[in-house]
Image 1 (cartoon, rainbow, N blue to C red):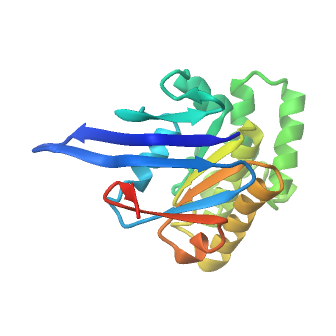
Image 2 (image 1 turned 180 degrees about the vertical axis):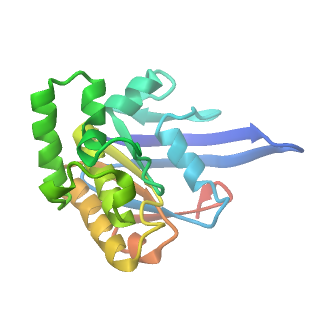
Length: 219
């Protein structure tokens, strides 16, 4: 599933002035590739990722996903069926076990429990976590393990566009390398469109293409 930016801009009203956080950005992201978006804090990269996730719509221009503008999508359905976001702080449910966290999007879709559990096991194995993790709570996992669970939940969701906002920001170099390897495999082996916002050069150099933002625009 492709995602295309067509002269996308986004402005919001700050305390004293209107801020143009994204300014006339265009790009075509292709399935089967892993992209990195880099730039200093305040450059607009996280705002752009939020727009691609359908958390808001551009004030100018369009974001086209599967041939349809995000302004035309039901944005709750967009985030359920087409676009999944992986966050720096994992966003796991603290009172749900690993398996319950992975299975959560399937439960929302009312997938039969037996089928949902089988898929949860399959994607948990894909991120190299053993069955011994199934009944653990997130508080009993390391940061790298929590991020693997978050990625497994994304896999269970089945979206073909995966957006990752600083997914390795809280991880050491070993776990960073493992997480990036998994994300790249989702692009190269599963045909997903993977877009990673990162400050880490070691992450960016593993991507198929690197885009740099400054003052809301590409450099």
